[in-house]
Amino acid sequence: METTSPFFVSVIVPVYNGENFLAQAIENLQQQNYQPLEIIVVDDGSTDGTAEIATQFKDQIRYVYQPNRGPSAARNRGIKMAAGDVIAFLDVDDLWPANKLALQLSSLAANPSVDIVQGLIQEMQPLFTSTTDDAPIFEETSRPYQFVNIGSAIYRKSVFDKVGLFDETLNYAEDVDLFHRAREQNIAKMVLDEVTLFYRKHKHNMTRGKNLVELGVLKAHKKCLDRRRQQGSSSIQALSEVPSVLEYLGQGPVNNNLENKHFTIISNDSWAGKVYDDLGIIYKTPFIDTHLLAPCYITLLKNLKRYLTLPLTFTAVSRYDFFNKEREKRFYPIGLLNGDVEIHFPYDQDEITAKKLWDERVKRIHWDNLFVKFSGDNLLCTKELIKEFDNLNFSHKVCFTAKEYPMFKSTVCIKDCVVEGETIYPVSKKSFDVVRWLNKKLTRNDDF
Image (cartoon, one colour):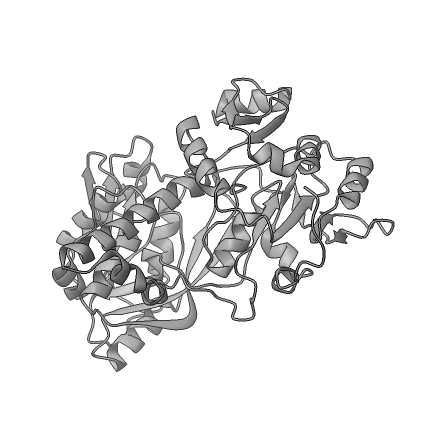
């Protein structure tokens, strides 16, 4: 479907070993109800069948290969090639709704002073019944949210003339850095209350780990502060701008009903991190993308403060054979506290990074404002362990389970909430009001 418009759009698709996704990404762009498009595929040194897939669309796309230099370099190559006056980016493993470009271009045309039009992001996660990586089936796993993501926005090409290209020294959060520079140049941005990006989570992009991404975000923020200092601002002046910076980036709190913003969640899986992400709050717990089996977790909780003041060490071998078999396929660090509590870091690539982030986050714990969460269907969990959790002396605790346990006060039964020992945060939100839980005030001293 061709659309009469003052804009010609170039869509840049950076790809590295994306043979499982490239054809679907190109077809997704061809199904946009705004046409025609210039589709530029930048192959960043792929070693799989990416080039062969691209050849199938050779008359419909512009394809270029370059040695592997990272996603920023690939996007920059695409920008330099682009003939359009509007630029958009689609990571090869993501998708757009069919009306994305039509919606955003309409807003761009109606607002000549605006240079960036952003939208909301809808996360998609593989169904756990899927057994193949070649044709993963995805489902929505959260409500749409606003956050910095290159693919959720469109940009007048002049933006890159004003703020420069992507910083190729950043392996992560290069989009945060770009938006920082856009704000510094007073680039006008608007946000639509419509989904403009389907962000698909799968094992390949999840193994990068939230920890590495967070380090990238911190580097991007530091670059911004350094630029402000070079312009004569003091550190205090620069930091005073943080709220407006976060608002521009789309990282401010998304729930104004949250009154208690200085809390720490203790969790035996990645649920805690999802809460902080959803509320736009910095991590105030070390339990981010970590996993503890139920026996270790209950041991930890029985003497929480003592354990978390001990140094984190690492072991080459888990006491659980099924983890050792898994780590033969893909290595990840296993931490130890006191030699008897195993903490798995499945999304970290090395022990140094895992320990650095763990130590930093332990310092942020609000011991006077703890909220404790347990996945009661965690591997090796028993009814007796749930009972032990229920009897622990924490003011605010919750245990998610797949079946009813009317004899326990802390359990909340939510069907399909816990899958393979992991609490699915968006599913838990359907039946559990996390903001209401966090707004509760401590009514007694916790014994930990």
